[in-house]
Image 1 (cartoon, one colour):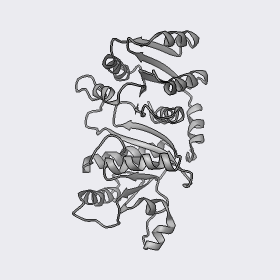
Image 2 (spheres, one colour):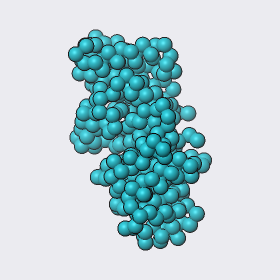
Image 3 (tube, one colour):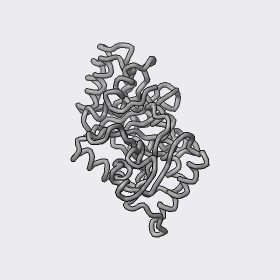
Image 4 (cartoon, one colour):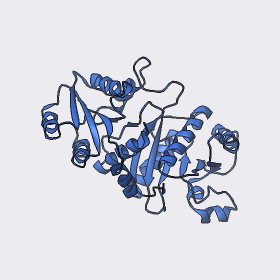
Length: 304
């Protein structure tokens, strides 16, 4: 498979999927999410279980009639009931992807994380991965974590690297290059995550992540710009060629997310990993384009 390096290629791969994925879409009451729903139905890209609370329903009934067979509408008494129903559809194998509309992320994740009826796979860590297309970089770049884990420990870092490498392989990248991000290239006990970075490098050299290169600490510019690395005298296959950026904490990851989105007009797609199925939790303010890209990524990463 040729590596996917643009969102145009990502959408081409989504449209070319031989089997349409089943999406549990919870509370799609905003215009952007409705646009995603209609586009997928019009282009026959996915099958939907639309889960609504008692304040909605008439519009979805009309949509269900227009695209009979490709959409099922489930009416619930509250947004929390809708969240539980969406999770149930995934847990019982009736849906391959879970996606939120206007429901608050906390409400949806409460159902996702429910110990009795949730979909966080036992022994896994839930984390968020963001795929971004920045005009100044010659390929897509994936990074974690901008939304879920405040201050990752070694176990969480390890899972983040695993998940992101798996996504890269789904995108056709045979040997993902992972940059462990910090503001310098030095391991320092004052910054415990740099000690974890050293352990992650050791794990990678022992084959824990398969055919992948993990290096750091290094800053974002060094990871993505070979000239900067050369000036600093840093020699690494990752420098200037990173596929994955692992940030030390949520503040750094989220700041990077907002910065490239606003100042670079980057295209974005994000999914939650570690769960039984990919979970799409876009911001309610995200564009139709971003939500559509996120759903495409989730469907491609659901390999069952």
